[in-house]
Image (cartoon, rainbow, N blue to C red; front, side):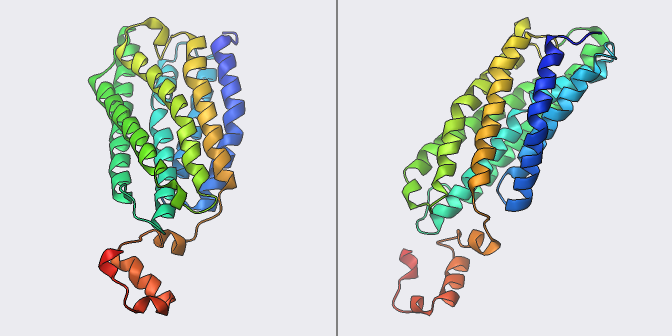
Amino acid sequence: MAVGYRQGVSIAVLIYYVPALAIAIFLSIRHGFRRASGWRFMIVFTLARVLGSCLELATISQPRNYSLYIGYATLINIALSPLELVAYGLMSRVITSINRSKNTIVTPRHMRLAELLITVGLILSIVGGVNAGTDFSKTGVYKTQTLSKVGLALLIAAFGILCAITAVLSQSIRHAEEGEKRILFAVAASLPFLLVRLIYSILAVFAKEKSFSLYNGNVTILLCVALLEEAVIVAIYEGVGLTLKKVSKEEVAGGERGSWVHLMRKSQRDPKIHGDRDYENV
């Protein structure tokens, strides 16, 4: 089997995402794997793109190996989840920065609930994609599973919540520290591209149009409505990530403004706080 248009696109994707994966690993080490930075999800996404391209290229020598097509389609299908998780991780950092000087309506707890929603959607999408791929290998007919539809619905809801959070935090962004405000602008700039990518997933899952099939759909549509948008989003997120300072654990804890834990920590550092300050009005 010769190298075709689809395989050529996979080669281009591989060339782009190998260095992107390296940058994601660097950012995760720099900003921390365990904190709500979201960079570990960038590793997941870029690694998925690298593996997906390798699976697609492997079909050149094994064109009848349905497992390769199933793996490739599943990795394409789950792209939205890690990208949304990266966006939520970045917004969590914005909230932490703002909370050092002003309380926000959106709290880290709200962000964790939204991230849980995305995680559930990711799991459902993976299971649904694998089941659909198994049926495809047996019957030659691809049928979207209900689990995939439910998973995508959760991702649609998460995207709507992300837009709302971005709008709410834009009202308080002036209270963020210098250098942290750019995060909100980066996420806001990525939303149109995320929306286009989401529309592609909606059409791929709910529409019966063959052009949007994950297995044998139109490659140009996949490139222009999905892959290019993903590449732009990755460039935006990693670009802003490289400009951010490393935040220490103490600074993260400082974002707990309004909690007794934070007030006690702050009072220990600054004895002047112990006066007539009314903590209830903080």
